[in-house]
Image (cartoon, rainbow, N blue to C red; front, side):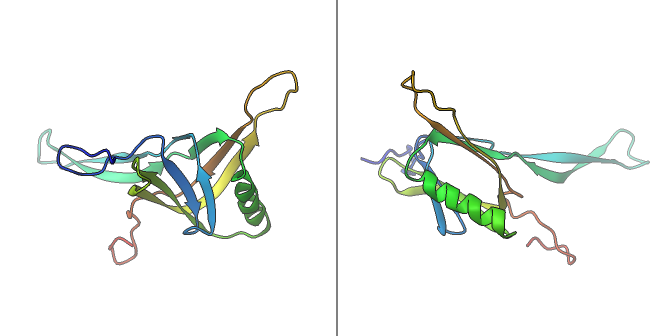
Length: 157
């Protein structure tokens, strides 16, 4: 049974999402947590000399937070390692997508990331005397998920 809002739209489940790199070339699988999927804007304030205290505001530069993903280390960790090996050997511009699914594994929302590059990867330490799950953490930098880049002609790319 799909979970839907009052107007019939599918609702994304916060526990059902995946990360793909280069349109599925590297499907990094499901993760238990993602943080940093946000954007902020600098605000440019303008005031004309004849407008007393009247101000105009314009959006300035966009700033994107690096994404941090966490999960239990699993078979998909091999795909992460393959992507890390590829980025370490050859400088390349990668794209990525964080994909949110509903309860029936249907895509609800997608954030397409520009210029994705891994920043940090780690697996929690191993200790024989405990029964903890090994946690994998991946941090990636990106240049955003909005189409806000300007070209010389002034049009968004």
